[in-house]
View 1: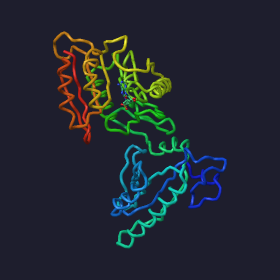
View 2: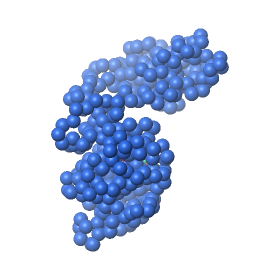
View 3: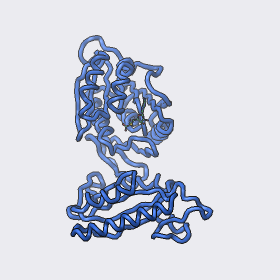
View 4: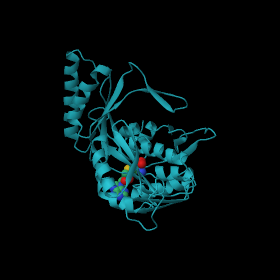
Length: 339
Ligand code: SAH
């Protein structure tokens, strides 16, 4: 695991793995990872204990077995979960106190008969290593029927019809792990099957890693634009476009953009932004001639199910017609048409 080697650089750890600050190395940028293996019935109680000292929350890793060349992950019944929480290492005394308290509380749990099954492990994690650590948890994924997201550091042997997006999202959003992104990719495939993508002009509003625009390009779109308010996303989109041999004009900013209107608009944002941007989104869509299917289309995602009516209302006031919706867990995507 990334970061494990880091503890060795630091002199005299007071608690296992706890770095000593200010001996030539400031501990700024170093975090302490508290990790423990826990019986499934103790997950909640131990999470609660860890979250008292770790403001950033607690992650629960259920052990998964991967099947079908890593395309399906299934939980392993009865296997212990690993809980992880992080505290800043900069204040050594506070960190030591927090770890001490945590050990005491875990001890009390055991006294109640709830049994965390492992020892609390403490190790130092440097931020730079952390930036790489998530890669372990990013598998090759098939989304929809044909779209396969392949992290650049993994191997994949494509089937004949596969549309393989080679992706390194870096620090940008858009890995395909999130339901909102998946809803867009599935929607894009549906548009493709209806003949809407081949030769189309497309704008991806909030392009993130570029995952959607790249997929649209690989599915045959002709002209691709990406905008994102985050310059890191713009850079990631450019790199992922190049990596896949797709040409995308990516720029920092938001709507409105020059060069429209577009046949297809992709917008995986949040409900409040979709509402605020509804008139601009509508203006970016090619107008129709009044007959169904003649105008540009919008695929909007990132809508928490409770906010769906608000977004529908904003789109309708902007003159759009809702022609479809899809849902995964609590997330909704809307397919809208410019009349
Ligand atoms: N399209 C990617 C990323 C979606 S995350 C995917 O589907 O996975 C949303 C992205 O929108 C982020 O990268 C964020 O930086 C960007 N964003 C936020 N507000 C925006 C705005 N007003 N205009 C354009 N992009 C915005």
